[in-house]
Every structure is written in structure tokens, then in C-alpha cells.
Image (cartoon, rainbow, N blue to C red; front, side, top):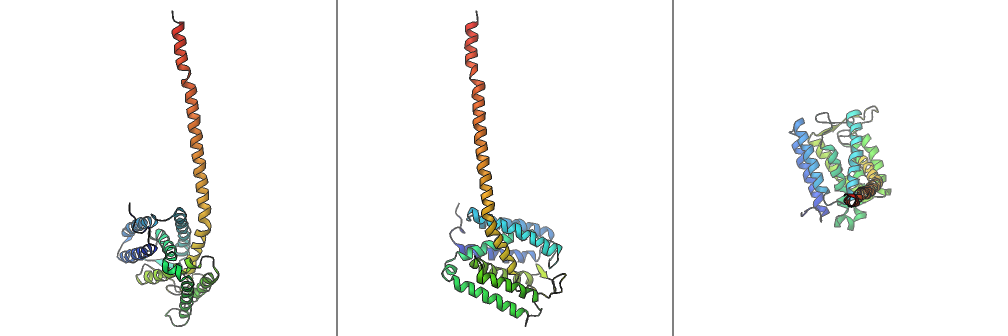
Length: 269
């Protein structure tokens, strides 16, 4: 079956942006039951985006989903640093994290980013720092917490091992956070719970958290895939061995029958 996303990283990025815009707009008018349907639809959209992905990219995506979902439960449900509209964890959030990672990954594969990689990373770094400065100077809410995240994110962008992915993820997360907050899908507390540190809505350095998800995916996915392949190889070897044993056992049970019949016929009077 023809996959329109297979040969165009830019088309995948546009697809993810479109899914995000439409999905969060629908969530604005959806009740809890509607959120379950949106969650199911988001998983379907993720599946479409993953059709053209390699096995390693798929594993990376699901590692991001697993790690990010754990942080969502801690950050929103337990800690309460930010609150979703229905005070829950919407079902579209886990697959949404997968789409965010795929956007960042595919954007790095576009011709423009590959051709202007250094400029792209420096532009992202400048945007991060500018947002952090605005957050502690002119924005309506003082964003000290975001500024701390900016320091971490800027360090990753300058000295990290996968800076193009980090820059690309930042670009999408900046859009996602501003759009999501403006649509009322979630909102950030005025202060980080338990610390008294003021933070923005959204915080300027929030993309730093997504960088940790990316690091986990890039580091853990090859190991997860290796374990899976070894398990599959062991299962395949076990199945072949069982088939040989069954075949050998069946041959041993059936072989005497003709001889028994012949012997019986000779012995008969």
C-alpha cells in the first residue's frame, strides 16, 4: 500500500502539526468520553506516522512514550506542576509524545535542516535564550523556573550529542506549549509546587524535559531492540528444536507399524 509519508520527512512534520492543531481544537469542546475517542484517534495517527519508520525509530518512539508518560503522571497527577482541563491525564497525551519525537526526528532529515544544520541549532539556541530573558523581564508572569530550564536546554544545544534533534524538538514543543495553553488544554501553576519558584504559563525552558526523553530513547532503544531480537532468535530456535523432536518422535512411533503388520501376517496360519 502506498504511504504518502514514506518518502517525505517534511510531509510527516506537516502531518504532525495538523494532527496537533485539529486534535487540541477538538479537545477544547470534548468531554471526558470525547477525550477517549481523541486518544484512540491519536494512536491511529501515530500508527500512520510510524508506517514508514525503521524498527529502531519505532522502538525509540515507544521508549519516549513510556518515559514521558511516567513523567506526566509524576508532574501533573502527583506533583501538580501543571493541570489538564479535566484534571486527568488525557488519553491522547502518550501517543502525542510519540508524535512530538517523530516530528523532531523527521525535521532533522529534511533537506533544509541537513543543509543548514549549524544555523538551525544556533537559531534554536538564540530563541531559547531570548524566551528565557523575556520570561524574567517583560512577560506577564515571572518565569524563574523556565529560566532554569533554559540554562539546561541551551547547554544541550551547544554541547549535546544530537543537537539537531534537540533543536527540532524545541521548535515543536514551543509551538505545542503555547498553542495548548492558549486552547486551555492544560495550564501551568504560578509557582512550582513545594518550591515557591515562579514559573511561566508555559515555562520558557519546558523543552529541556523533552530533551531527556530523547536522550532516553536514543540510549535505550538499541538495547531494547537487541533484547527483543535475542528473545525472538531464542524462540525461533526453540520452535525448530521442538519441531525436530516431534518429527523424530513421530517417526519412531510410526516406523514399527508396517513391520508389525508383516510379522503378524507371516505368523498367521
